[in-house]
Image 1 (cartoon, rainbow, N blue to C red):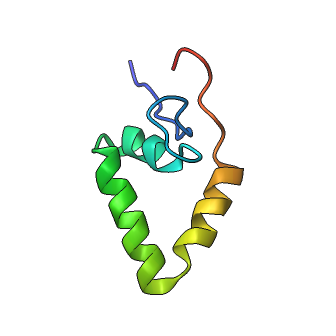
Image 2: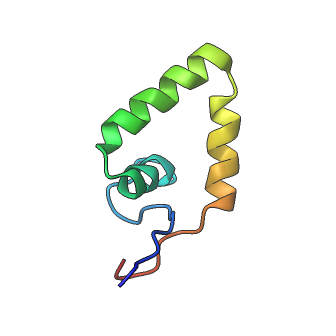
Length: 66
């Protein structure tokens, strides 16, 4: 059976809004790696903070039990 993966903000293992942890769950990688990459992109281009806020608004929070 095919299961469709959905991107959610994490309810557990979150630091601020759960965006990085949710993306790490979606791509099955370490959340710390996603956080470090997000900080690097924020410092290099400056758009990382704006992108984080937009993702925080757009990506739904994970339902309970997921």
